[in-house]
View 1 (cartoon, rainbow, N blue to C red):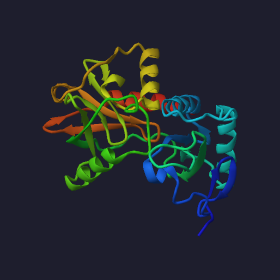
View 2: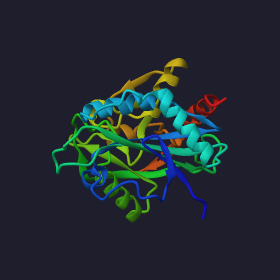
View 3: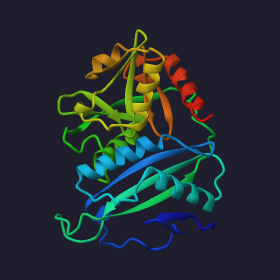
Length: 281
């Protein structure tokens, strides 16, 4: 078995080296935040937006941000790790930040450690799914709105439970709802709805993750004079839609083929997927 490398606090080590203790706060309390970042054709995609979001999350959780925790330094470490693992084209990168050991629920320190992992992907570039996803609601546990609902933390049980429901119902994904019954996101993606050529997505105030790819899609739409609206999404909104697609930093665009008894086309999804692949050139 090849010795896969990772980076822990700036140092390249074996992924199998026991660098993190059982008292790690990410393990005990989910006291962590993370970013999933795409390497496409050897290029790190949207890294400044990822680091900006990560720093905002760290500030929200009152973690100390080291002076050298910059986009430039993180970029250098990621490329070093890619080289160590002999990855030439596409990969999934995970950057995890966690508060250092100490304390029970109340931390003894706000200093942090970080871990960078990389996993090779077989796909080259953003690949649009050929068959539309079959999705439905997950409403057993509703996601509440709070100051941490828009950030990606290690406390992910609601997504785990939604994933179990997805598997039991043999779906491709589940759509989560908030306390008001508004559809806010899927298990790992933001949700976009297309109606009469205009684009609709959940507002951050509804409790969805403030997705990096969500921001990028809204930017591409603006550049191409596509009307965009941040509004509450409901079952009725999806039932009346022409298209529905999901977005995240790793997969890019995934189009939805069916929600309940409604079927969709994918014209806008194809357009955005092409635009995403142009950004890697």
